[in-house]
Length: 327
Image 1 (cartoon, one colour):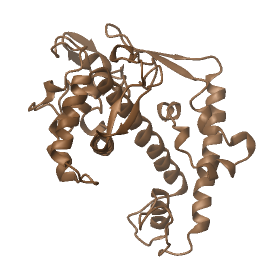
Image 2: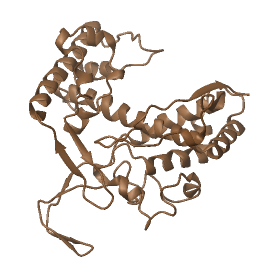
Image 3: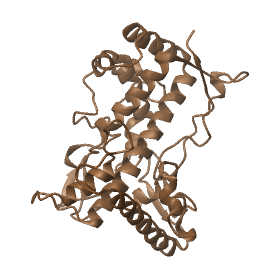
């Protein structure tokens, strides 16, 4: 819950929900981003260090209350517009917004559903945070690495246009054929995991790992960023080389502990398939119809890949890029 609150993407919040709140609560999502309540120091040779800033508890409590009010207002606003189970939706051609699906299911007589108000708030928070912030971060890193490696960008663009040709809509079958795109996204995720430190684990029994005795009840931090750049595991680990994943058995969908961007096992990220699909569709559609280029006077060496240090990993400086109609 704490980690999620730090990464709430305020830019995805509908304006009508914000404006319906009291003035002091309208910017609640933005407050979750700044000021920072804590920070994480990630060092490949040391355990990650979590530091709480002065006044963090007070600020966190106030932010949580404002966010709870914000999500409650969102539910009330949509509920007021739902008059029956056959509600017509205004958000697309027959598409049902997630919030409407939750509210309609709550009204159903299916005894298997136990969606109370607090549960729906938690689900909405998960979608706003885990479903958008991390996906957006990985998408930005993928595009940044393509601009910093023009030979990779050229190869990917050629492959996409060869497979898709002049079609306006890219189908899932065609997307599955673009193997190099999957390799590009996987390589970006290896180098720049959106969450450099995975969720905390606690040992349930005494265990010995590689000669180290770890007592029961020990809090364990897993440094996914360091694992993804470990020279004992990866050849030339700091270089962007999508080719390393071409024809390789390493996959996010398998339990391969060399690649822990989305975690692993039963506690792994349940939204990894969604995130990868969104990123691959975006890049494929963009490069199919447009040329991705740097602004005039900017070279690949000017692309700054400096990372932020915190609970989430995003570029420290804004990425500047242009898209032009394909030539």
